[in-house]
Image 1 (tube, helix red, strand yellow):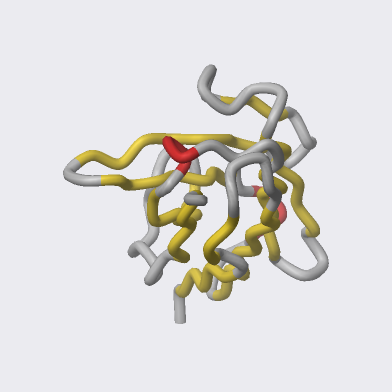
Image 2 (image 1 turned 60 degrees about the horizontal axis):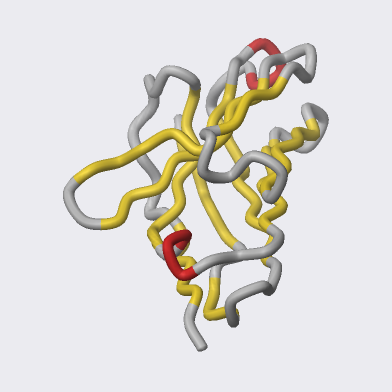
Amino acid sequence: QVRLVESGGGLVQPGGSLKLSCVASGITFSIRDMGWYRQSGQFREVVAVISPGGRVDYADSVKGRFTVSRDDAEKTVYLQMNSLKPEDTAVYYCNQNPPQMSWGQGTQVTVSS
């Protein structure tokens, strides 16, 4: 069964950190470009992507603050988020890049004092 399960979100103060995890099942994870996306309101935007070889790219809004990584043995992609800002508040999702799988439930990140 093809499935994505995100976790690690929560409430954090501005300047704080969180690490998100996403476990994939039902796909050959190691050969897939993977990405983290977020949705606040109507639109979903890509935040970070990582290739099977570990090449990464980030949205300008998170460069220098977020780090994406992957563990192919665990079929897991991570997003380390530092120096969080209120505008990072969103539901975060993972998927292939570009998205091809059904979306998981996401994990809520709220940055507020």
